Image 1 (cartoon, rainbow, N blue to C red):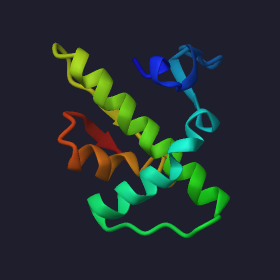
Image 2 (tube, rainbow, N blue to C red):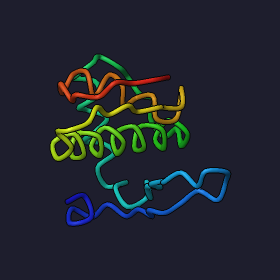
Image 3 (cartoon, rainbow, N blue to C red):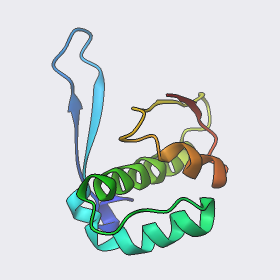
Length: 109
């Protein structure tokens, strides 16, 4: 459903021991939503973002993509618990978004 809304991503196996599944998002595919998501972050959680800061922008885009994915995934996966292991500053924004949206996932930071 995210692909249908313009999100680009790659899904496959990480070439390390155990070959875990991995999903890589193309943040550039949703850059047109940046201002909308910055406004949402302020309205939802009171978290400000500096203008024209590339690292902040990429972090915001990835956090919103991860929260979006977790919402979509949890709506479909009802038989097992979902644990999201998030990197502190890159995808960590997904944590307050999941909490505010009442997405049923357990997070590890």
